[in-house]
Length: 433
Image 1 (tube, rainbow, N blue to C red):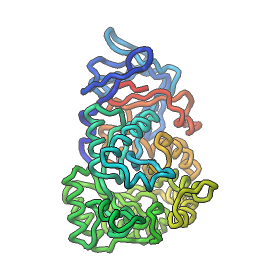
Image 2: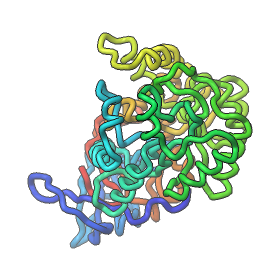
Image 3: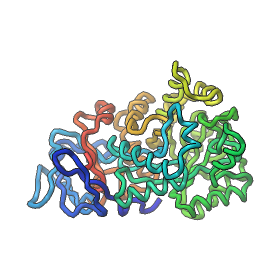
Image 4: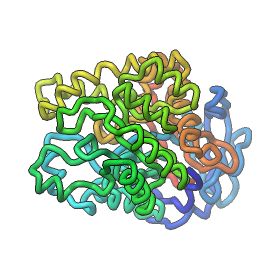
């Protein structure tokens, strides 16, 4: 993914009432974070006690024994807390959130409206302890503007890795569907394609617009308002063209994929990671283990759509409801089988389906799927950083890495739901909470 984290700093808390002031660059003062307990190495679960992290120019410069400070520096007292690296969510949709008015909002909001809405959701996500996210599917103009606003410090939010619009087939998941023909033509994104050459064009155009990675919809999806199922939607030739075009321009490709046929075809074509993975089969598991591809299981999304579809206030369309009732209950067992088989898992919620700011609810579902609390934390730290080739910058706390950290009062290695009660957030050396 490369250097995606530079130039990002944001709003700093000031004053007794917690007002905010904008800062274009990392804070000039040295920050001393006094940690009672510190997850020193998420890869092993090593916990240190009574440590001070020294933050300068947005980076961790030292980690020293005891509680220290120096004249002129800012002290953040977390002696009574458990400190971890800032969390990474590998699958969000910051510019929208599912609600009963969602289909109306699709045709009444402009890209500028969506960017502003996204700024609010970005702040919620940051305050929940997620300092880096991957936004996989949104109007390109809106999400790239939001990403750059966070980098400049105009918007308080996590660092954003953005795919822009999803690459999808005409009439498939991520195309516009369920409206009049005139409306669908007007709203259809530039990333919809048919045929290998056209799909190459779509990939190159997203990269031209500013995509950090490419996201495709390799199968049907639950929330597309069409009775097209959850199976493979691209031809093998189209998949090969997409992946070749992206890789040749230095971009990874991740696939929204439910059906096993679409999962396996994408992996055989050289795809890099799978989002959702509902019908992952033994062949898919073997392909993922052979290539080292990551699975991003988005268990919260499956849980959310099933609860809505089966509840008294279902606002999904009939086509969406049928797929939600089919796919939702299967995702937890899929994650359990994948983990038991040794598939690499990166944390992702699909937030925007579920509510932004509730991202940490995914940890409890991962534990329910058989991961230990430490393994669940690894998915959102070292694993997700590796997934995006950002291990030298985020995912753990060490000298030279980004000064991204969070704190909770309890021990998340014993009760992973502690991560739903984050009490402190620092990103790029800036104290947000």
